Length: 242
Image 1 (tube, rainbow, N blue to C red):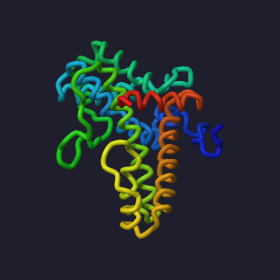
Image 2 (spheres, one colour):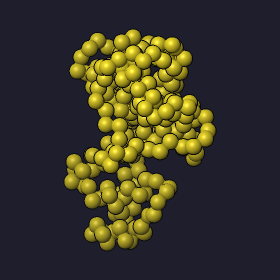
Image 3 (cartoon, rainbow, N blue to C red):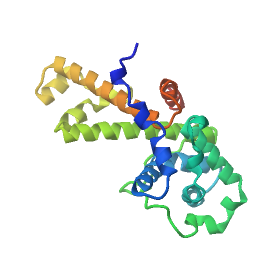
């Protein structure tokens, strides 16, 4: 049985981003909208690209989609009866693409008005993630959603470690959060950090626990009920091929 103290505060996080985005214009609503755009921009972009659109057209359509969302208050309909937010969002995009309005040149770049300024590429001018070849557009959307959720959780935890003066500790322990990549033996990490191997083991356990809790919190904000969190995380790893 899970310790309720270790669960994300679902009552304060569920649909919080969605609900805020559907409210009247305010700083809170705009901040929520920006968070949504940044979180889901690339998964939606990847879906459109896998549907056969060129890169520039896909960029235009994602921007136009978010503008349309704001103009028509689409997120106001994303209530607790709509289930998982990522599914609701994908359905909304599919409807948007099927509508002649989405094909109008007047919609390009949101009719000349960008919703907000998004940094869509890294400093070296590259996309943050690579779109996989082959497979269904829907599968690529969910894969990119999984990558975005994991990245957001990791970024939050890293920021916390840095804030507490533990940047070096996080850097050494980060490889233990993934099954990929090379992990140093605890003895080598202990020597680098000036602590005992036992303390390294404890620190890894704490980091994994904190990362898991943050991932649960990320997921909680976009599902209908606390009971769906575990299933959503399971689907997240399935989307990554795990």
